[in-house]
Length: 299
Length: 260
Image (cartoon, rainbow over all chains, first blue to last red; front, side):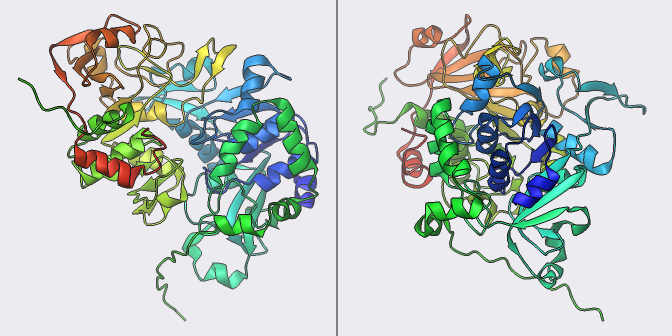
């Protein structure tokens, strides 16, 4: 992880750590904080606790998003301090709806300049974001749509359950925008719970969402999503999300948390060890295996 | 005429849940949010709408959660669901294509035409309170065939003038609304902790149709930022039944996280 972040994430980059509740890569966010990257533009549909941590740590100057909050809990205190009070520094924002953000990644992934959607009608969102532009269909219907510009982040950081060592990546459970952001980005870091043999991937090709050809680095990082989750590996740590609400309320407690858990650990393995085995055992779900399908052998 | 007083007490949240669930009678594809709407939909599935398919914006169609989901992306929504789709498919094929029958929205502010603010309190550039933003609410408001609003009522949330219009409701001009050509018909009902409202067909204005037991018209007016329109025949919201309360308390929210 250290090498991947050092080589692929630079000051001033636009960085997207995606994952919709599921498969949010906290380990990479922490490493970006440890390496003290600065002036990043952070993109993400749902800036949640990881971006509160990163923005509270001072890595970013701008946020591109569609919903900010601590899901199921409440606010992002560090982000709000910067937007409401410029404390300790202003934070530029560029805001869309979920469909708008998804469509920006779709355009980026398909190498289109923009993407049309039927949204934003009679909403104030385009009033405050001039990049959301009304346009008429050139065909007979002349339907009014809104277009959003392509987003091609400098770096996408995508979590997944497993990949082979060349980066062929498989995901199950909530898919978020992992595929779209990976194809949209200029550089891609895939972080997985397990690196597996290529044959494991080839046994179930329908589950592959990202091909190794577009991946710049594969990092094996067990529990790399904590306190987010990896379906089938570990549950969302709701206790931590609740705890973060208290930690982030004051910059001083947030700084103390970063000192202990991010700056105070050399890497994610140390972070995982610090919680202890019992903590992780409690987050492990009972198995619920998928059925198998027969691809057939056509020799 | 007097009905026997119910022996079973209930909370404001519980009557909001029961009243909302009854609005889902016969519905099929329902876009669910976390918190109260989630309990409402699960209650409706067990009572008035057995064919209800729960759709979550995280990409789940036909969820069968085995525990109370604590967010719209809870892993319990994925396991055992009918389908998991990409977020583009969810918003484009399911919602924009017009396959969502009913959806729940709420917000920090609502006006008399059901427009909603989930973006800022104060000025956008210098907000007093920065709220979460749209998420999927803006497109849900436009495309869901029917939108139900569940919100607690107060002067600061039921306002004459929104600080920001995140999600459109009715415009106040029915001819304009009819010409919009959206797949959705906008908000149809509002359920609060004090009563229930529909939107008047001629004016698109929120109209009080029932008050909850023990709530007066004065209570409603004291928690409303405009001079509220009241139906000619104001009724009383039926109290939650013992069966509904048992489902809520024993199965759907046994910890009382959302219903106390």
